Image (cartoon, rainbow, N blue to C red; front, side, top):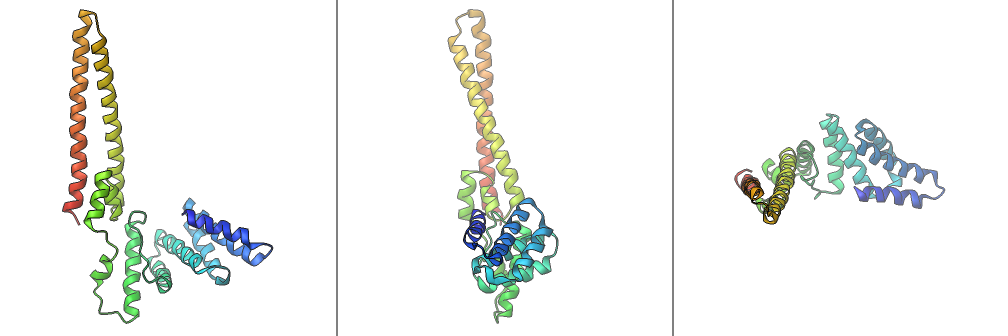
Length: 237
């Protein structure tokens, strides 16, 4: 995303007095801004205006424009047109793949369809559909080590964005809760050790003991959650 903004800035900076180049850079910047705000209709309008005069854009800029256009068309439910735009991208970038960690399964599905149809149109009709659709699928090991580091990361990496988000947020909540339990256990232990009143020692110990047991439960819960996230990667495709 930063690269897009950098390209937009570079186009504006090098445009000089030329109104044609200024207009081209403005379209590119408008496409990016509209997509960031979720104004997909505006993306389509500005991208199509930009693509009507391709002379002011580099080949890389054309890929970015068409990518935003295709993504927005999928968001608007126009899968056929999005597939056509993806095909135009694949003509210039035949090895292009979408990262499932950042791209929704819906968009990837339309993109894979475009990949298959492009391959068939270029005389590769003997290639099996399953081979094309599995081409960009991550292997288990890269997903596994990611989810071991942080639950949900591996799921997002292989395209399960919804599950990945749930696991990531749950892991964050569990980690924060475990940190609070460690702090409570430490403070209650110090309070118990510092107690000098015989009548206060017993209650303070009971408080510390309750925190201690709860902390141990939190540790077991955290380990179980991490294990579940890793096991989900191993056992599911």
